[in-house]
Length: 430
Ligand code: SDX
Image 1 (cartoon, rainbow, N blue to C red):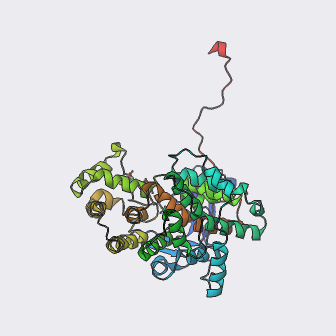
Image 2: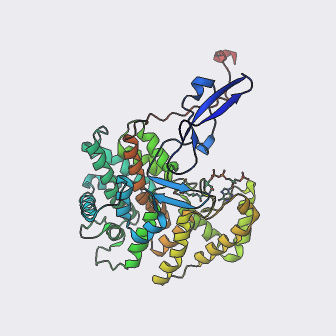
C-alpha cells in the first residue's frame, strides 16, 4: 500500500495533518503517530494500550474476531497436535521449524544448561517456609544475573543467544526447586537422559526413596499446555519484558520483570484464581448466583478465566484445553467435580446477554487449572507453569527487540491532572 495516509483535521486550528498508514503481513493497519506531537501539538491517550501497537513483530499473530493464533505463521492447532514445547521454543526464537540436526543441537545445549549453582540453591533457602513460588521464581531468575556474568553484555549476539537458551533451560529447575522448598523436600537435580517436560516432572515429584513412575499422559498433557502458553503477542508480561529490555537491562532482569507482571490475577495469575473461584462456587447449582454476581459492577467479582483484551471469540487455546481436559482426566482416572462446575459456568455465561454483548468467552486460563490439578500440581504453582512456558515467548521477543533498529527506550507520556503551578507555604503559615 504505497504511502497511504489518513487525514487528521483539527477544526480549532483549521489545520489538516496526513498520518502515514503502517501495515503488516496480517492484521489491522495502524496510523504512524511518531511525529504527531511535533506536527500537531497533540498526544494520543489510550489507557491500557487498547488501540496502540508498541512495536512490529514477526513472532505471533492473533485474530481476536476469528479466534486465530499463529506462532511464526503456524496455526496453534497444528503445533498442538504435531509439535513439542521445545520445538516450539526453537520456532519462536529462530522463526523456522528446526531440521532434525538443528533440534538435536538445541535440545542438547538446553539439556546441558539445566543445572543451577549450588549457592543459588542456598539463596532459595533464605525464603520463609510459606513463600509463594512465584515470589521465589521471580527472585531466583533476577539472581541469575549475579551468576552468569558471561551473558550480561547485551550488545554481543552470542551472549544474547546463550542467555535466552539458559533461561529456557533453567526455568523448570528453578520452578521445581521452589516447589520442593515449599514442601520441605530435597531439591532433585535435572536428569539429562530425560526430555524437557518429563525431566521437569521428575524434579517436581521424584521421591528421594524410590524411582518415580510417571504416566506418559502427564508429560504429554503438560507439554501441550506449555505449547499453548508459549507466546501471545504483546500481552502484559511480554510488553513488560520489552519495556525493561528497552532500557538495556540484562535478560535475567527482563524475564524476572515479566514473571512479576504475569503474577497478577488479571493475567497469568488467573489460572490459580479460576480454581479458587470454582472451589468457592462449589457445585453446579451455585453457578447462576456466581454469574449474577459477576454481572454486578459493585460486587468487585469477575468470572476468572473469562474475557480477553484481544479475543472477542473463543480463545483457540481454551478450545484445545477444554477437549484435552476430558481426555486427560479419563486417562488418569480422575473424576473432578470442578470440571462439572466449569462446564456449567461456561454454559450459563455463554447464554447470558451480559457476556454475549461484551464478547466474553473462556480464555486459556479457564480450563488449564483443572488439568494441572489432575497432574497433582498444587494451585499456587499454576502461574509458575505459565511462566515456564512463556519464557520461550519472552526471550524470543527480547531477542527480536535487540535486532530491531526501531527499538528505543519505552517512555509513554501522560495527561497531567494535578495542581497547577503554586508557591511553597512555610510550615508556620499553613
Ligand atoms: C491472560 O493479553 C493476553 O494475551 C493475555 C493472555 C496471554 O496468553 O498472555 O491471553 C493470558 O492473561 C488471559 C486473561 C486472564 N484473566 C482473566 O481471566 C481475568 C478475568 N478477565 C478480565 O479481568 C478481563 O476480561 C481481562 C483483563 C482479561 C480483559 O480486560 P479488558 O480487555 O481490559 O476488558 P475490560 O476490563 O475493559 O472489560 C470489558 C467489559 C467491562 O464491562 P463494561 O464496563 O463494558 O460494562 O467486560 C466486563 C468488564 O466489567 N468484563 C467482565 C469480565 N471481563 C470483562 N465481567 C465479568 N467477568 C469477567 N471476567
